[in-house]
Image (cartoon, rainbow, N blue to C red; front, side, top):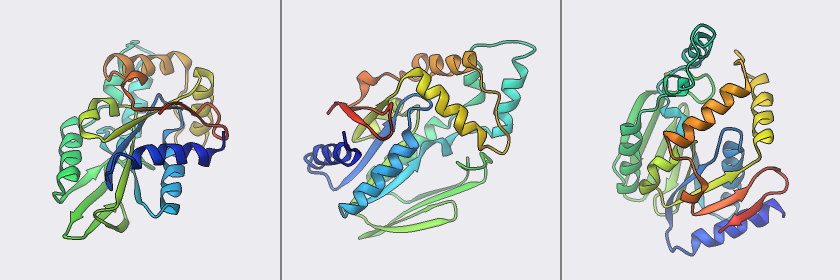
Length: 236
C-alpha cells in the first residue's frame, strides 16, 4: 500500500473525531520505526495544512548514554535480566504533568531533559500558550503554531502507560528480525556504539511487556511497519 494512502486513511479517521487539537501516541517495540513514521506523518499533516509537531518522549529518560553503556558493561560480571529498569529510567510524573499541561493549555518549561541526539541531560523545552498562539521550544529550535490547529505526535516505547493522557495511540508492528537489524544499523552511526546482543534485545522487549504493558491490543490503530515502503493498516 502506498505510504500516503496509509497516512491519508489515518488522517481521515482522526479528523472524523472532530478535534482540531490532538495528542497522538506512536508506539511499538524498539526498531519498529516510530521516529521515522512520526517524521513522515508530520510532513504529511503539514501538506494537509495541519500544524504538527514531532515530540520524542525519550527526552524524559533520566540516564545518559554513558550511564546505559555502564549498566550493560556491568552484566559481564553479574548478569541481571532486569537491567533495562536501571538503564532506561524515565521521569513518569513529569511526563504526566507535561501532557496534562498541554491538554489544559498551561505554560511550562523544563531545563535538563535528555537530548535525543547526544543523550546528555542538558536539553531544555518550553511550551508557551497565549490566546491564539502556542510557542514551543525544543532544544534550540522554536516554532509558533495556531493554538486551535495543532497535532502533537509523541513517539516512545512506554506510551501505553500514558494512554489516558492521549487522544489516540498508533501501534507499529514489525517482525523481530527486522527490528533487530534496524537496531544494528542505527547503532553503527552512534559516536559510542553499544554492544548489541540478542539476549539483551530480548531482555529489553520482555521488560517493555511486563513493566510497561506494551501490547498492541491497547492501541486504537495498528500499522504493519515491517517494510517502510509498504506500510499496511491492520486496525483502524
